[in-house]
Amino acid sequence: MQKDKKQLKQEYKLGPRPMGVYLIRNTTNDKVFLGVAQDLGGIINSQRFQLRLGGHRNKALQADWNELGEQSFAFEILEELEPPADPTFDSKNELALMETMWVEELKPYGERGYNQPKLSTEEKLRRIARNRRAVE
Image: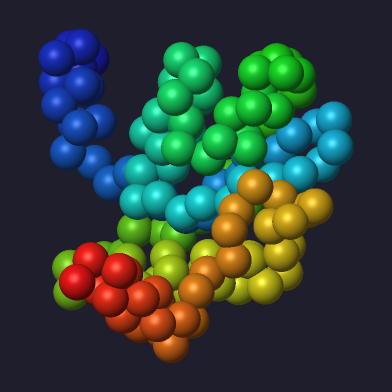
């Protein structure tokens, strides 16, 4: 029995999305932008759309995209997280761990990439305190 389009579309919408770590690679200079998502297909489409429209939140990545063109960039999936059978499984924590491991390996900031180094909790608190003092 063949399923109709409507039923197939509904099954797709209800099905699990591939989640994991993705990369946008500048093939001209090998700089990378690393990210994680609970919907890899969705985030890659969103990132490409933002870059094409010129409104990506990462200004350095956007500037290189504008200068070099779309053909100089590759979208890659580095690692996928299998959707767990256990509904209590915390995929956000697992994705954060995967991101940390890939950031440590690739170090995608400075000359090597477009990401910004993550701030320590101590540095975040210092910035909050500094901003509060500036407002008062």
